[in-house]
Length: 178
Image (cartoon, rainbow, N blue to C red):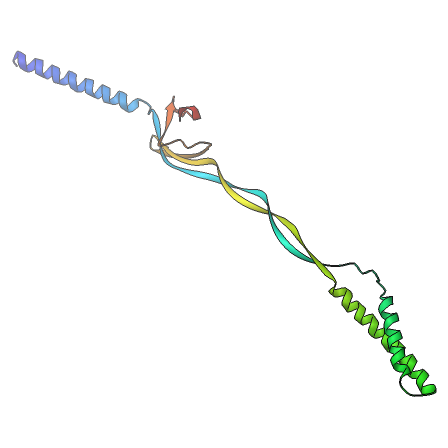
């Protein structure tokens, strides 16, 4: 063998050995990041109360001054008695007067009751009720990641982005890095 060939062979073996050593070192070296495969937001619904008011017209019945409707009964009895007195003669006149007074008293009571029911006034009042609005808040993220061909999951309180730092074979999970 000539000298050039020996030098070339030794250089080739040296380069191949060095290249293999460098490749082996890279293969043994731990990765600097875990690849994030998905980060799904976890949400919570919050209901927020608020008061909703509107103006409403309300009809009220005025309080009756004569709750027993005595005036209607008396006036009705007097008018009914006077009309009954116009009918018949003798005892028939007395019966007609009494019957007219009774019927008139009843009619007067009903007329006064009807008038009291129609005696109303209106006001505008504010009516309020509590209604709820909903809001979705993100409370965290369900993260799936791959580290050295192994997939794993965890929940974080922040979105880690596309990768998570790794140090000494463990994830570095602090939000300051993001």
